[in-house]
Image (cartoon, rainbow, N blue to C red; front, side, top):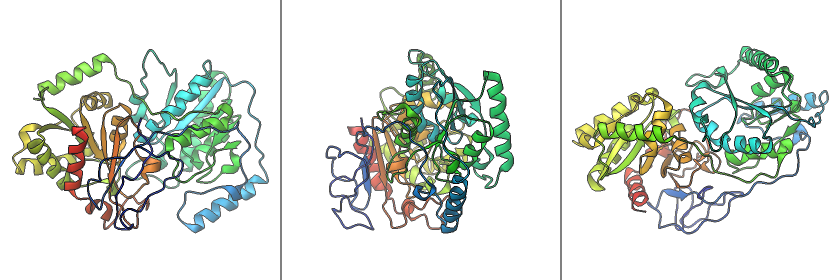
Length: 455
C-alpha cells in the first residue's frame, strides 16, 4: 500500500539544488520510482504507512510543551498564557473505568472526515458494545455508509459549525459554542447519561469548550488552537505526521493503544456501482476506452490549478492517449467546470468529454462514478481524498499551501505532483501570485497522467 511521501531520485526544485534529498519525518523509504516527470517538479508516490504505537493515555502536558497552530506570535503567546493560567485551575481527570457512551468530533470538510475513518474503525474495534456518536458536517453524512459485512454502527450528529463554513467562516462564534454544548447536553439526555469519553480529532478550542460545557467525563484532543488545559489527555504534535496518524494517536492517548496505521476506506454497494455504469453508458462512455475522471475545483482559491491548464490537459488526454474524460464535481464547482469546457470546445475535443459536474444526484452518485474511472485527476480537495479512499488510482495536483506529508490523499495508488517553491507551507486561502500553481507546467502533469495510466 502506498502512503507517506518521498522524493524520486534526481528530483529538484526552484529552492533546492538537483539531487537534494527531502527528508520527511516518520516515513519509511519507498521503492525507487521511474525518473521524475519534470526536472523542476516533484512527483511523489505514497510509501507504506508506519505503524502507530503509544503507551496508554497520560495526562495533558503543561502548556509550555504545546505547539500552537497560529502563525501570529501574538496569538501563540495569548494561547500559551491562557493555557498556563487555566492549568493552575484545572487538573486532568481520570478516564472512567467503564466506557459506554463515546463522542467523536470532526465537523469540518469531506477530506478531513475521510482522514478520520481509520480512527473511527479502531475505536469501534476496541469498544464493540459502546454507543459511539460522530459529530460531522451534514455534507459528510453520505461517506459514513458502511459495508454490512463490516458495520461501523455509529450514530451521526449533524452540526454545521459557523466557524468552519466556507467560503466565509466566522472567526468569533461564541453562540456556536453555546448551541453545540446545548445539542450535546440534549443528546446526553436522550442516550441516558453524559458521554464517558469525547475525542476532538480536529484540535479546535471551540469543540473542546463545548464538550466541557456539555459535561463530558473524559476529554481527549489536541490543544493546538488553545484551551488545552481543559483536556484530560492530549496528543503530541509532530512535524510531518499525517492527519490519519494524528487521529490514530488520539485513540491511543485515550487508552486504546497501540493502534496500527490503516488506509481510509469507503464502501459502495453493487447497486450504486451498477447505476453509475448505466449513467455513464447513457452519456456516451465507451467500455473500450480509458475513462479518466477530472475534478478541477477546490475549497480554496490557492488550491486551484486553473481552468486553462485543465482544459489543455483534457484535450491532450482525449487526443493522445486516447481516453474519454468525465468532468466531476458538485454545484460549487460549476463555474470552474464551465470554464474548462469552454477551453475544451475551442479545441474541438468536447465529443469525448462527459460533463457531470454539478449534475449528479448526490455525493454517493459521485462516488460511484469516480469508482468507474481508471484514473482520477484533481486538486487537493475532498473529491480527491474520496477517490483515493475508494481505491481509485489518483493523481493529486498539490499546491504549496499545505504539506502533502500531513494532508496528502491516502489510498492504495496515489501520486502527488507539485512545484516546490520557497513560500510553500504558507497555509493561505488567497494568494496574489499563486506561483506554486502558475509554475506547474501542464506538460509535466500530462506526462504524469500518461505514466499513471500506462502502469
